[in-house]
Amino acid sequence: MNNPFIELGIRHDIVNAISELGFENPTPIQEQSIPVLLTGSNDFVGLAQTGTGKTAAFGLPLLELLDFEENHPQALVLCPTRELCLQIAKDINNYAKKMNNVHVVAVYGGASISDQLRQIRRGVQVVVATPGRMLDIINRNAIDFSHIKYVVLDEADEMLNMGFQEDIDSILSTTPDEKKTWLFSATMPAEVRRIAKKYMDNPFELTMGTKNTGNQNIEHEYYVVRARDKYAAFKRIVDNNPEIFGIVFCRTKIETQEIAEALIKDGYNADSLHGDLSQQQRDKVMKRYRERSLQLLIATDVAARGIDVNNVTHVINYSLPDEIENYTHRSGRTARAGKSGVSISIVNSKELGKIRQIERVIGKKFIKAEIPSGFDVCEKQLFALVHKVHNVEVNEEQIEQYIPRIMDEFADMSKEDVIKRFASLEFNRFLEYYQNAPDLNAPADDFRSREGAQGDRFNRDGMRAEYTRLFINLGSVDEFNRGDLLGYICNNAKITGRNVGKIDVKGVYSFFEVVNADVDNVMNNFKGVDFKGRPVRIEISGEGVSSSNRGGGGRREGGYQKRESGYRGDRREGGERREKSFAGGGNSGGGFRDFSGKRREDRPERRKRF
Image (cartoon, rainbow, N blue to C red; front, side, top):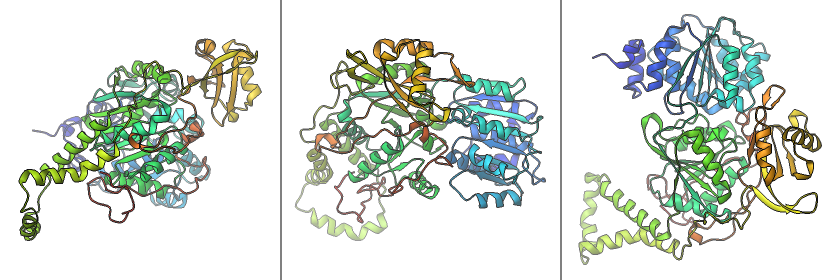
């Protein structure tokens, strides 16, 4: 019986390589797209969720179509982040490991441009690049794209969301008109539709599943808590999943760093990944995560984009994304390659509307879950320990010499006593930790604390008014100041300036407040509005600044204060060219135990935890 990939038209040496990588059967996107792309005669649009095998869907045809006797660039793959850039380059090299003279170079910010230029000068057929660094190299006249045959735009929706439209235009203007363009995306917003129309000629369009929907193998849960209990609730959710191997998403770099540092102090194996880390720091964090010595990776959207790690069990949205489409990309970090996973969102009562919006986008209902009680967590941890002991592999040869002494130690105890004492060794820790743990679930009708997007203040007429904080994708780079933005909002939304509250202008985006009664008017009147050819997006901002209780199960008070940071600035290309350095970098510390359960004797001062 022939290998299914051979039947798709992939030759034996490539099939042998991918078989060693564990490829047995093509995923739906691979099965449908590879025969089309192998013809080399069509522009192509492929819509499929993250984790469905899109890299192989375009990488395998490229290896079939390119002439590797020639040492000049023939294929260009553009992607939004350095992590994804490195992942794609690594994957294509792995697919080609049984081929001769295949040269793939990864071009991205945060690494030495001299090294990348040296690789290009030595000869390369496939260039995988982030737009910012690629444009830098083009402007140095250091690469010749006149022989490019294929351009792949991977994660096209995210590249456009991150503001790379002009960079993409500039890069593609240096490539031949007769090239073929392959576009892959998880979602199909209007911006992606426009780029397909601009760069493609009657493309073959392939949609796996319904457009913009999420992976059906993912369970979506949400927990409603008060803002002050958010961190404690988050830790209790983690404790209630002893085997969790997850990615935790925050909205800003500052929040990411603070959550990671708080978890490390509380004894968890966690670390942060965000755009202010150097490439060396990011590589170190990702190496630890892939090796599973980290249990929790705390990340921003831009840093986590393109992370392809096997067997991620949970994605936790510590903060919901500002843009609803990003939820699809976040949740897609789990349930990859046909496996199942859980996506958890921790929200306050004011964000329930956003949960409903996400449900409509992904086409799947969320399950409302309850924060477990302290007793529930203790029980879960106990039986996780029992399960681990039951399944542990015993090294008979090494332990045999100690058995007589062990048996002597337990000689005066019954089997039941030994089991009780052994279990209590860990169980007592959680009993103590969660003693008198409070209920952290917030009532659905709890609107007293003003923890969400709304605030209770006075409007310009001196009347008490409730305001809703909105996001707009325009800022100072669009030459707006507060006064200009106020006028622009009022003119397009057809509301009076008296009903507009605080305006906070950032670099590539801004926040502004309007009285609750005008929210629908603003949202509706901005539909279809363009600014210099770019669609204007208005969204309800996730949540305001609030303090969080850092005590697991209510044991500790105090903690850190969330601070608002440049979210859209954070979503730029992983710090490339556009982000300032973050003092202190990433903390590489871990919890008292590593993820395998081994004791960390080098940190005895830490509170002992699983």
